[in-house]
Length: 267
Image (cartoon, rainbow, N blue to C red):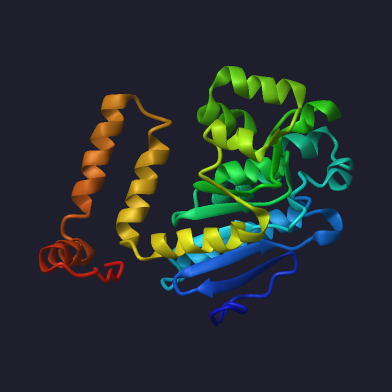
């Protein structure tokens, strides 16, 4: 249902799914009393909700958002304080992080307020970040005698390079949205009051693009971090050629030649 709860979605306790416009789903973390601290339950529900949205052919782009004051304040330290060594090294939350990072459709983080620790790692796990002017990003784990464990050391380094990443990780200092944008972490920055509507508009544009091509392009970009240049270009070529027999490719070419807007069906 546009503007309301998405139809035929399972009930979750810590996340909510709505559909602001056609083709776009909004997945909102909803633990306001805990500033959206990432408990095991919420990470599991995020992964479960994304699995549902990946299977829904009507959803072509997903927005991941939190509250006005905190996107997500980090791991649930009260929960983690009970971990012994065995629980820490066999952390049952790892599969949830993996499934979030490997979500196949375009995933946009909309960040207002604090995105700390796991919250920052969650935003980094998305494809794009749209930030409100109040957004603050940081990996403060070092101040608690630990280090990032949700992908922060790898994702942040790939995004901004070793030196700057190590400075943020070793000091635990947060950065403002303006600096995050200057570093290339943030794709768009807007005043808080318009950040969500701007993100919806961006997602709606992406949702009109051919779903198969979006998926293959995303895979190619993500694989670029794991391959050398020539291997990556090879992967890109093979992925592009897999799109050649699709109906969306036929529609895209026909629409161009007929000077009309294409209508992609994901086939």
